[in-house]
Length: 151
Image (cartoon, rainbow, N blue to C red; front, side, top):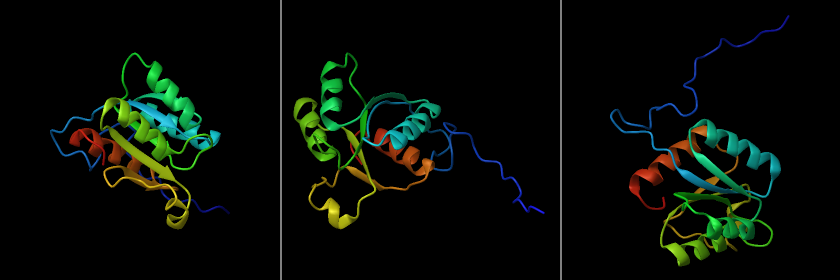
């Protein structure tokens, strides 16, 4: 015999959840997603698109910088892995902010805090440690967009 748990209804991705106060509008953003791991990048892209965000992907910091410079419409936010080949996430954010000024940035990483010390992350930038729940990422995006600055 197989015993399965009862099904619990979950709010669909993109719908307002408890972190969106009544009357607050769920804001969609143009996001530059930078992740060198294919499976993680594809998964995050699907979460973000299902939530209604417009996503442009890059495999590393250098490619992301080129996409940023070639973008007709500026991005509202960057979500980037910290440690990647060719250019780290913090280096990418610093370069973009040097060109356009402060913007919302959320870093993601599966490395330990000790390993991340080599890659200084400014306090105004957010950091989510992998693995994290989909809702946590979506919540942090909304916080950053509502504040109009990095989290």
